[in-house]
Amino acid sequence: MGLNLSFRIVSYTNMKQIFKRAGSGFYFFLLFALLFSTTPISVRAQGYYKDIFMDGGIRLTSRKDLPAARRLGMSIEFFASSKGKKAADFTIEDTLMQNAIFCGSPDDLNGSLLYPDGQPRFRMIYVNGGAAATHGRSLTERGRENVREYIKNGGSYVGTCAGMFLGSYGSVTLRKGINQDYLHIWPGYTHSSKLTKSRPGLSVEKGSPLLKYYDFGGDMYVDSVYHNNGGFAYLPLGFPEGTEVLMRYNWAPVTKKISIDKEIACWAWKENDHSGRVVLMGSHPESVTYGERLDLMSALVLYATEGFGSPKVKGELLKGEKRVMDKGTEENSPAFTKIGDKQYHHFTVEIPLGAKNIRVELDGAEGYDLNLFMKRGSFAFIKEADHLEIAKGAKKRLSLNSLEAGVWYIAVECDTTVEVEMTPKGERYVGDRSVLNGVPYSLKIDWD
Image (tube, rainbow, N blue to C red; front, side):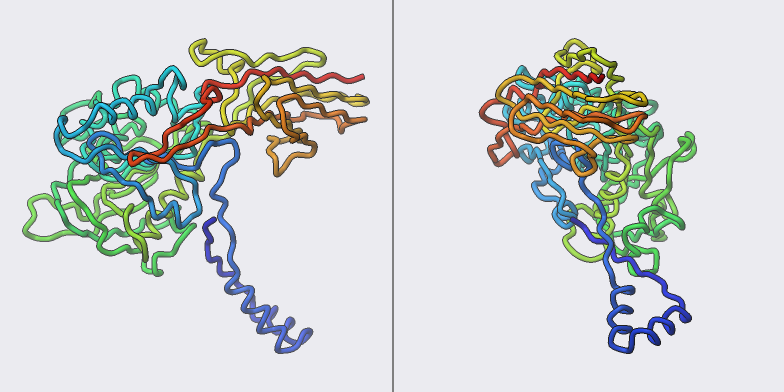
């Protein structure tokens, strides 16, 4: 888990009072604690298989390590395709693995990024540098649409260089109009810097949310961030409403025909409360293992993952009525679709005044572990639940003499997940993979 150094201000009057009452030893101890206490940053949301999926697929950098993720204690899964610049450099295994991840397979109908009901299976996708349009084409329309669904349903996205271009509607220097091979998850256009193998500085925009995590040496500036044919947000075609400017380039050599000085180097966009946050950057801080550039990549990851979509309620449970969750992905009925690995399904119920002998029954398929949670007034997760049942197995019962009247949230969690085998190209799921297409269950609540 990452730590954010939080400096607490204590007034001179309060310090004198503390000193007078407790003596010098206690005073200096308390002052040290106040000034240098650390405040944890929550980097793990509940209800996801892992925190980050890193895309190093066809025509992208085949990265296997993301230092910022390690620094923040985030769980990560990656796909690293063969290295090369031509189609012939990539193998049939690359194509098959990428298709299974982004498009789906019989074992996992909508792919690794999505749960059976279309909800995001990872908190965030990180897309490496490389060749944006070529990678986009290799994803196919099905894969690109699945990424759009992932963002729409609450998953976040960080893209650097090629990942930045890929997230936009198109690059005006490469192709006119909307590029159909791009993801279109930020409704604006980019422009190539035409700047190769350089190290421009980046100025943090005043009021940038990145400053919530790090102060970047106090000068609002990150020096020498590697840049290789990246780009910037292109304003003449319009700047989408809600876009946040995070950083600008500080680079204006007189010999360059195109200056990127003061152009928008990094920005973020979140369509609504239920969608994920998209964070795009034209340069490359992702491989750095120390200093302010590592702080920068860490801040991008934190801001993206903090912007994941709010949970959705599947529906309201009615007294005495069994709700059956047994639909498959292909039936396109997310309110009644089976649950995926490490996923939560949320429901509400109105408990009337005077209700007694409340009974909640969860019946799931044999061979899986499902958990049951209840909380009044807000989403029920394992750490916040007022009532819970987490024994092994898929059949659970909560029996309560009474409950405070009002809206209660009931959640089901699938605690069964896949087995993983590590390969040079990334994680491969092995053994029983049936959980990827979901576990059926029913849920019922009743009272006297």
